[in-house]
Length: 117
Image (tube, rainbow, N blue to C red):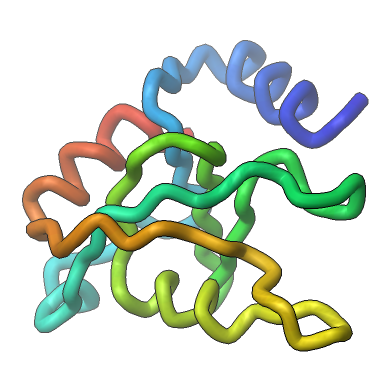
């Protein structure tokens, strides 16, 4: 069973409905934690090799975003920075993405509300 199948099974078992291409695992960020945070619209590129993960998985302090590839999503700047610095053994970018512009906290929270497990 691959990771996506496992997650879909876990979602079905818990009765959660996930319609968004982004899922958040962990403690929901508080208003204080998001204060001053910037948000960006991005599209993560397709898998480049058989070693790439099917979805983009970025974790920060125990909170994980699982992001579907080739779909426009909104992510906080801290997760974008992690993607910027995530490289392979030959210093090529591990998670390549296209930056589409800035977004608002309200848009980010609306996106998350449909994708939380």
